[in-house]
Image 1 (cartoon, helix red, strand yellow):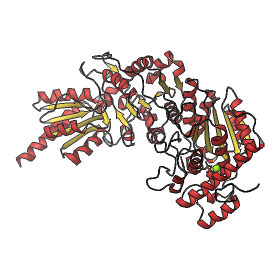
Image 2 (cartoon, protein in one colour; image 1 turned 30 degrees about the horizontal axis):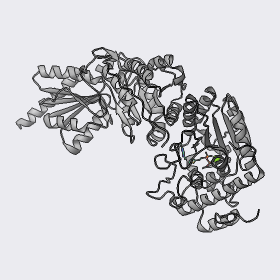
Image 3 (spheres, chains in turn orange, cyan; image 1 turned 90 degrees about the vertical axis):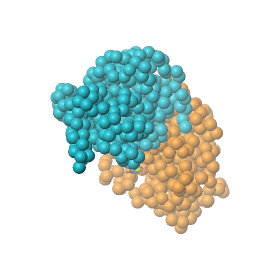
Length: 285
Length: 335
Ligand SMILES: Cc1ncc(C[n+]2csc(CCOP(=O)(O)OP(=O)(O)O)c2C)c(N)n1
Ligand SMILES: [Mg+2]
């Protein structure tokens, strides 16, 4: 476990998130289909997990001591694939074949095909129950490993999420940390218009969770919150991460239309300029 | 993927329930308890029906390895899946109608697509649930489970076979659906019978008719065969306890040896055993076929015996079906 975060650590995580965003945009442009908005909004959270918080061994994906990450919002597969590739689970060149016939990088993650994916997802609302089961199993084994489950805010309209929320509270799963990517958008528009989910924090609180509310793009805050969540005992933690859908590409940001639309070649070029390059280290700054 | 390991030794040699009339759910409860003693990887989940599904026995002895998920079947399936990802062997139980209906998509997506080692053992299948009526009588569950890739579907016919099924699936690293009943069933399997996944047991192939039955219909089919024999028709019976993967070898052998094949199940004639057998026959060995089962209808309240008769599942119904077939068959012959 790392001790005190240095400002330089935060900088390098922010840089890693920038590279992850670039990889997301490149693979989505190459595939011509897939989910841009929710991959970009979760980029900082997923970066903090894979490059700071989680204990994992890319060379030994089934290492029993690993922390588990469940991407309940499976349509954000590109952010997971980028994090896995850059962590060294598989060769980065695979990313160019996202969603192509024969490529293990399916439209939604398949655990049968990729080392590092714990369970297949894509049908929303199921990941938290699975995470609870893993947390219960780890507890039976007296394992120190932790479980992280990332959900979308629209996803929490699913009834099963609240069944699972109740279970995690009931079983006091303090080895579990859920994250909700609160980008306020889903496919058909604003969550507030489609099916209001607010007030979110009091809902989770009333299901016996410890609730953190943070800026999901502030790396320092993300990292600090993951550390604090680990210290919460006797109840599960949920991080309500306020985010911007398509964060990092100004002309896509906050637009529901870019939920499942990929960049054109021209848009990719413009986006890469905004993000400061083609995946190489940005100079200065 | 994951940290799944093979279960430790889970076989037992005893012949529990052999020759005894018990409900298959009772045999399950006892088998699960014993399995739990032998294999500490076994964990059990229920959805507020542990008294009825008989998982309560396990719960009482192993409270740390039992998880009541409340009345939340979708969460039940997901949690069982998660437990399997840590190397546990989860048995998840509730009534068949809720398990396969309410949580079908969770079973498809979370369990089968990821190939998770979870055992779904559902009780209260079929009309013999009795008085609770249609809402509680699963007549579609075999079809619902059979259609999902990578799923194994097993319907034991008596207590003795149930015990063996539970032991066998604990050692089988795949998702499995086991269908059990509420009411007592007579013992039918011989003492030297040993269950194997995917292997039918042939009591006999009749030159006139072979009845391929599953679950409690095996006992009823055996009675029917006896009656037919008395009436001068040569009848045999097969216990098709594994419905998927289907023992096609046994089906084709019967089809080649009999003029008529009858399927018998306490389930809709659509998509279950009758469906599975007709798929095999029509592709590989077109044979005259009659299906005994519920005919595109819901159940209703009544006693199990009354309902077996009402829905045309009794041995007399099988006899009638077979005899009317042969009446037509012979009159066709003479033309
Ligand atoms: C059970 C289910 N219903 C519908 C969908 C189709 N779908 C994919 S993404 C999505 C919207 C998700 O919104 P949200 O959870 O807020 O995700 P994000 O905004 O982070 O992309 C929907 C409806 C699905 N994948 N699963
Ligand atoms: Mg959203």
